[in-house]
Amino acid sequence: MTISSNTPEGFDYYCPICRNRFIEQPSHPTGEVICPACGSLALVTIELTNTSFDASILGEIPESIMKEHRIIPLRRRGSTLFIATAEVKESDFVAQLSYILDCDVRFVMCASSHIDEVIQRYCS
Image (cartoon, rainbow, N blue to C red; front, side, top):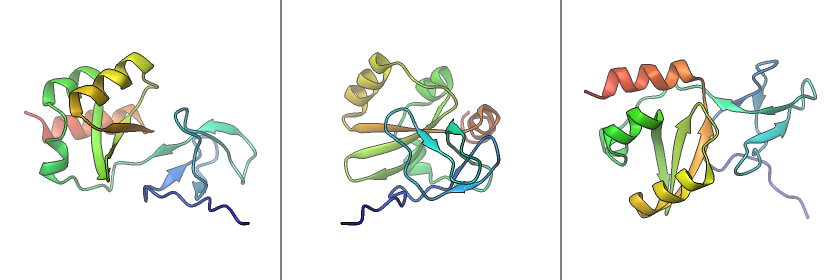
């Protein structure tokens, strides 16, 4: 049996050490993976610089929560909302956000400067 390692979310993951693009799916919820190029165990990240945002997906999370916790909703797949963050979130926050939004949430790591840029561009 062959187990697929493609990222079902469709995000481009990058090793923060060598900048190699990942096709492996990082472990959930930590986002760790061993880079096949440099062998580092790292938290993989996505890049938001070339991402366009649909107003409907940005409306999934209230602006006040986005700004306070520095998170950006990326896309919904079924009952799961994928959210960009620059920091690993506490399990209590994840559970609370999941309850508030009435869906499963999955965090994807990205650079804090990208989060700030998106919040500044799309939030009032």
